[in-house]
Length: 130
Image 1: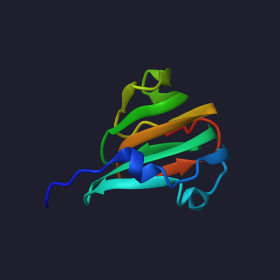
Image 2: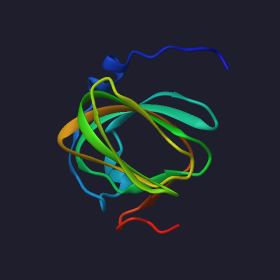
Image 3: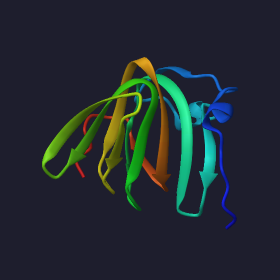
Image 4: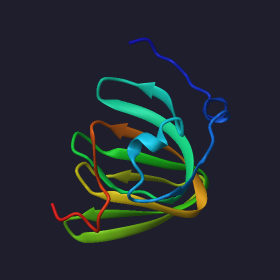
């Protein structure tokens, strides 16, 4: 694979932030909200903006890196020890451990960049139990 570089600002400039995201928002409704900055067979680098609350998600094939570029979010991660809430603002990064359910809550809006392994499992209910 040939090394490449992506300009995050240029990549997300034409995208509209997704407004009023909810846990039951179909993933297909988010199409066009996130730019793919780079991708391999195992991982994608994405950036986009939204406000509201995401569904629970997890990534069985690796850790996910989350970097807040603008705004703020509360990232809740469920580990074997229980839930951890990370209040993240611009410039803050976090690593979501492989297989851990997590979700975002960003009532005033957030722009994130994530390095995400596929595939992603989603659950729109309360805290998943597995």
